Amino acid sequence: ARHHNATIRHDDGGMKAPRLRLLAAFALLVTAVVAAVTSALPAMAQTHMPMERAPDCVAAMGALPEKWEGTAFAIDGGTLAGAGLKPHIRLWGIQAPELRDKDRQETVPGMAARAVLENLLVAGERRVTCRALKWDRHCRIVAPCTVTAEIPVGAKAQPHDIALQLLEAGLAYGFRLNDTLPWDEVAGERYGHYEQIARKARAGLWPMWLGE
Image (cartoon, rainbow, N blue to C red; front, side, top):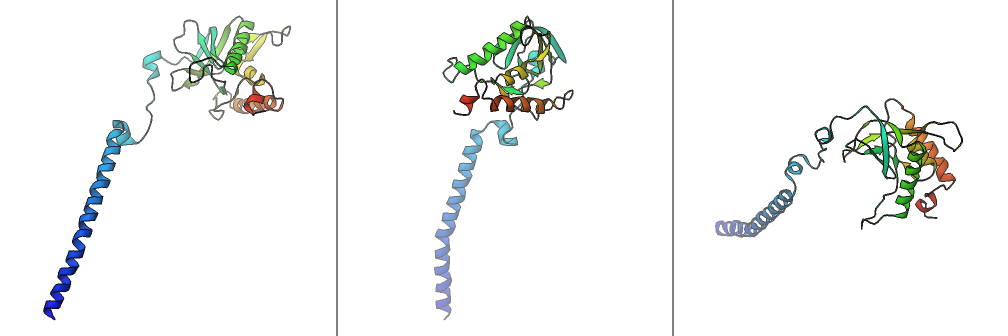
């Protein structure tokens, strides 16, 4: 009986040994895979996972101006270049069609949006007033801007919100409207209202955006 029991213990140990070796090999494989994936990540991602570092726009562009007034030109349907101003200005609250596609060719919708923006600037002799909110990730100034012009032609010249004009024309749509302007907390609602009007009227690019 003692010999039989010893044999049972010996056989049980023999069955466990391959299993333990298999588990050990699997653990080593998992460790190697984790190490390989982790080493492929940037150092910051390995420790903090994965948070994009904001650029130091002040170092690159100088202090964010509270207000800017000057001569402006259209870069694309939603971006201005100011004479004597190093950073570009991204119009707050809207997204216009991209000027260029992935092959860097100009697009018809992008050119149309830029042309309308240029016309607005020309109507106001290119003099714009912008109130800065913040930097974006490309170190552009995010700001609502106005141009004083006769809109429509023959009307009394007065300040007009440039982005709102693009929304009304159906050449832009609302973008990050919950990013509230401290000095105009209902601006997002106003932009959304005019976008809705343009969408219902199928103004500008809305038929294309809606796939009609």
